[in-house]
Length: 492
Ligand SMILES: Cc1cc2nc3c(=O)[nH]c(=O)nc-3n(C[C@H](O)[C@H](O)[C@H](O)COP(=O)(O)OP(=O)(O)OC[C@H]3O[C@@H](n4cnc5c(N)ncnc54)[C@H](O)[C@@H]3O)c2cc1C
Image 1 (cartoon, helix red, strand yellow):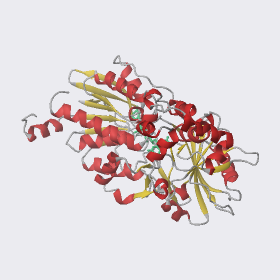
Image 2 (cartoon, rainbow, N blue to C red; image 1 turned 180 degrees about the horizontal axis):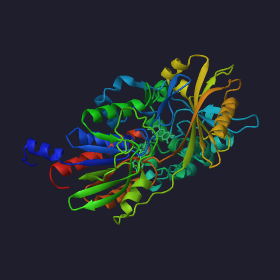
Image 3 (cartoon, rainbow, N blue to C red; image 1 turned 135 degrees about the vertical axis):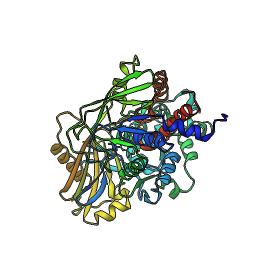
Image 4 (cartoon, helix red, strand yellow; image 1 turned 120 degrees about the horizontal axis):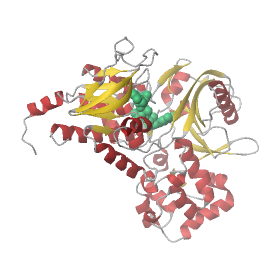
């Protein structure tokens, strides 16, 4: 424990210049964590608004998130952040957490609601929905799981391979794969079962079967097992962006939109961040960040003691390449996300809120009945309108008109009698894999080890934390805390 007086530490913070590259949730959280202890912070965002993938808009007068929307209710770091930002009262638990799988049938997709499960693995293979999904032979094959010798997950870490070997290919393909493919565009063979379903390994050893292990992890009470574990923010996730922006402006942080970090040079006492000519688009951020380049001022390089890379793997790789650091930036799956407000028409909406098709059953990779999932959206939409979000594996030739028509056609298959499209928004997005992908932790550690060799450089964001707001918040807080400690206590 150092005996440096607090005043000395505060003075050190005040002279530690921080430049954050990227104004998504990772960059904003990093900026706030630095600014709140007195570090002068400049944040650079190349787009005309802050928030990155987080975007909330009004469609037909209904406030909806256009890409990320939900977070886990059991994520402590995000819960703490929401408390600190005064947003706890805005947290709305899902009203319906049920998940269905759409099967291809000659008459169109047929949706089967999954019974209580973990990662799609059912606790009871004899449950009627399981039989409907995999047929009688599939159920008998799945039952063999009970008769096989127990296997510890330590020997088989791949979720897909484990389920296939114990319960058969049908359980893997029709209950497990639709969830990982629909959510992340990741095959279950690439998911680390220990990370995706914590505790399953020990439960498998105790129960002797995979279904039995899932049964041990589920609450005894059926209603409790079906209780939604996800939440959203009333008014949209952009509230998180707005709250962080407001806090940063109060702390005199310099927030710049339409400014791209172009390159980095290392100087004897830190870094210079070089800026590219600004995008001429009008700033439309949630607060009023400054935009010096748009105002005609020359973009001076920014000196920094700490540079936070929070702009994604490709940008980070490009920025550090000149410094002899080679980072892997694997291509990411690209999805089109279509949000629709439709007339309810005569359709009966009795399907689960989230539907993942078995590949080939529908054009969409996932379908969310947003109004069924969230009471607030349902109330805003009223009985006459439905809010739906569908994602599609992106094809370069698709344009917004095609995609909206495809989404409406899929909706009409699922809910015959649904009316026409009243309003729609389409976004094309890359999907960073979750932290539970096999090898993710090793890749993150290797990236941080490579970046950490350069004094004053750190990296945060979905490429390192794994995709998902709660994972990013937890990882960013930990990483910034580590760096703040090193800077203030003198070992950086
Ligand atoms: C369709 C979709 C749905 C999702 N749904 C959910 C969900 O329901 N729940 C959930 O938790 N997560 C969800 N996610 C994941 C989550 O949205 C992301 O993991 C998270 O928002 C990423 O935050 P980030 O700050 O790491 O990156 P980003 O949001 O990508 O922010 C990086 C920012 O850096 C900027 N930038 C890039 N290069 C430069 C440069 N050179 N100079 C300046 N700025 C630069 C970019 O413009 C961008 O704004 C979803 C993602 C997508 C795409």
